[in-house]
Structures are given as structure tokens and as C-alpha cells.
Picture 1 (cartoon, rainbow, N blue to C red):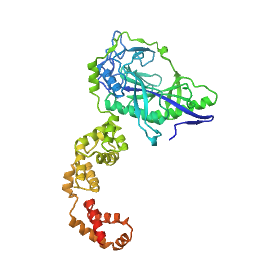
Picture 2: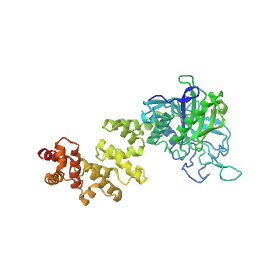
Picture 3: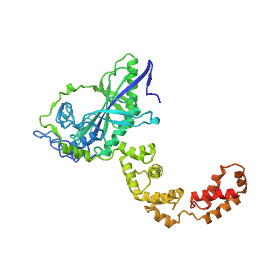
Amino acid sequence: MSEYRIKGETGEWEVVIGLEVHAQVTSNAKLFSGAATAFGAEPNTQVSLVDAAMPGMLPVPNRECIRQAVRTGMAIDAVINKWSRFDRKNYFYADLPQGYQISQLYHPLVGEGSLTIEADEKAGIPEAKRVGIERIHVEQDAGKLMHDQHPSMSYVDLNRSGVALMEIVSRPDMRSPAEAGAYVRKLRSILRYVGSCDGNMEEGSMRADVNVSVRRPGDEFGTRTETKNVNSVRFVMAVIESEAKRQIELIESGGTVVQETRLYDPDRNETRSMRSKEDAHDYRYFPDPDLLPLELDDAFLEECRASLPELPDAKRARYIAAGISAYNADVLTAEVEAARWFDALLEAGAKPVAAANWVTSELFGALNRLGKDISESPVSPVQAAELLGLVADGTISGTIAKQVFEKMLETGDGAAAIVEREGLKQTSDTGAIEAEIARVLAANADKVEQYKAGKEALFGFFVGQTMKAMQGKANPQVVNELLRKALGRA
């Protein structure tokens, strides 16, 4: 597939994309206070004196927040800086009571790393691509202004003030909306596997600032704009397409792209200017005098590394090595809950390939129909393994297995109990099968003649008629063998 290009009035353009993802750290408290961080609480009910910037209140780093950020860095194979420092980023905003944000600029906790997005021809990603990650730094979030609570005033909710964020800054390595979408999905998947962020973009616990510029293919980078707080993969992709086209039209009409911060309006699918883009010196960064530098010892780093789970790429490789198709491996590893469920199914004794095919088709299809996710599955991995085992050992056919699965969904009963109760065991009784075959061939003498005359496609018809006569309970392998013998004699 060709590279992504946008056709303008004066020729083709290439888009250059970098993303700054803000991920809320999964922890027991805020970055510098003991206040809770639960989503959806009543306004201003999760605010400590530190969060409200009361005089004399001093911040104390939350060890768990630092630990989770380090674990995330390790998951993307990044450099972990054993010495890092907090800085004050000075700006005034109504929902930032301190008048500055505690962040990291000069000495971040996590240095360079990367992640790989897989090839996906259908999505427009012709080959796997490594996207560089420049840094991960930890910082505190600001509060939230509410403009719809009063006709003439804005209210302030400080529940988010002081919440721990990881800012994950990519390099400008992406060249299409599809690549950016794949990057966000892959990063979200890693965060959820690690357990450092729940990845819930709808609730704002993961959001992206989208940096976009355009250039003639191969030219120097153009001037970029930053679209703030984009909260879905679909919107990230839409922002890139919309903003790139805006910049191209502006340049081709004789205008100049201004480095600025913009907002995305999903209803109109367009970005609009918010403010001119500040540089670091505008914020007057300086080391936070209330906080000592962070110094990490080897024991802490070893504990962080030992606590990491098997990550999506490693899990995917393990599944493929077990014979599972690359497509099924992608589907099974995309979400951590599905991967854990599938691993439990394998641990219960299911064969990998048959299990993968069943989960991605039968189970996911049923859950979609029921409007449930895999964590709410009415059938457990152990029950599913029992069902697949009955198919593998010939007790029931694949057709009967579908019926049994439906009964399992309805009743919660085990597969073996349902098969016994309903009398669904597959028969390999050659005498009973031969009797039904004889009846089928006698009733379809004209088709037997056609088959013998060379119309071999009719063999499937005879198999179907025999299985129907046996109510689906005949062993298909035995039916095939006995039919071939019978038709050879007929």
C-alpha cells in the first residue's frame, strides 16, 4: 500500500504527527496528597489542603505514583533515570490554586523508549513501525472549570487538582491518522496490562494532545499546532485529518501556519484557535524548592521490574508460536481482560488453536449479542474448557457444541451436565449410522447415480442428509468413512 498523502491544489503533502498522552496514574491517592481520586464524586469532595494550596502546606510525593510511572517506562523499554527532579511550571489559571503546576522538565523520571505498532493493511499500515517515545514525566493535574452551573458565573471543581498524571511524549514519527490511532490503542493496551492507568478515555483518565504539521514529502518539518485534550482514538484520527487539511489550504492560499494551541469541535469536525503556543521559557520553570530530587535505588527498580506482567507483544508472540493465527492473536491480546480470560482457558486444558477460534467467534459473538464484556461472561474459562474438551474427544460434534453453549449461557450449567441431561452425546455406533446411510441412499437413488457419474460435489449432500437423520449426533468422521464405503458399493 502507498504512503499516506493529502492531495492539495499544488501537489501532495505529507503529515507529521507527534502525540503527548496524559495518563492518570492508578494509585491510592493524589501525587502530593492523600486525597481520593475516584471518578464521578461530588464537586470539591476530594480536595486536601495541599490540593487547595492553603498557606504552609507542603507536598510529599506518593511512592505508588512514582512506582507506576517507573513500571510504565520499563514496559516500553525506556531509560529509567535514577535521579530526577520536580520543577514548577508557572502560570495562572482559575482552576490552578497554586499559580503553578508541579511537573518535570529538565530531569524527567523516564527517558527514551519506544513501542511498535503492528502492520495492518486494512487500516492503511503496510508494515510494522517503531514509534520513538522521548520521555515520560510525572506531574499534577489542574482542577476543572464548570461553565454550565450558573447563568453568569463559572464554578471551580478541584477534585482533579493534584491528581497524578504521566505525560508520555512521542517523537514526531507518525505519518498518518491510522498510525496515530494504532499508537494510542497500543499505548492504552500497555498501560492497562501494566495496571498503571485504566485507559478510560471517556472519563478523561487518558487523553492526548495532538501535534500536527505538514510538509512536502521529504522536506524539513513545518510549523506545528497542538490540539489539546482529545479523548478518543476516533477523535485523534479526525483531528489529524482535519487539521492537516486546514494547514494545507492555508499554506496554498498564501497564508502561514502559526504555532498555537487549538481545540477540537467534534460536532463540526474542525479545530479552532485557543491561544498562541507558549515555549518553555514562557512558564519560567525552576526547580521546586519544596521537593527534594527523586533518587531511586536498585532494590526499588528490581521490585518494579519483577512486578511487570507478560506484555501484549510477548503474549502475542507466545500465542503465534502455539499455532494461533496472527489475526486471532491480535484480537486476543488487544484487551488485557480478554487475554487473561484466554490464558485461564488454556490453563484449564483447552487446546490453543481450537480455543482461539472458539473464543474469537462463538464467545465474542455471544457476548456482543448480550451486550456484555468478557469480565461479565456467563461462562467461565473452566466451563469453556470442559465444552471444548467434549468436542476434542468426540463426545459431541461442533454443531451440537453450539447448542450446548447456548444452554450454558441460559442456565449457567456445565457442558457435560447439559449433554447428559439432553441426551446429546455423539454416536460412533457404526451399525446405527450404516442403517441411516442405507435409508438416505435408497431415498436418493437418482443422486447416487449422478455421484457415480462424476458429480462428486453431491458427497456433501449425502453427509448432510445422514447428519440430519441422526439429529446431528453422528460422528462426522465416521459418517464420512462409512458413506465412502457405501457409495463405493452402490
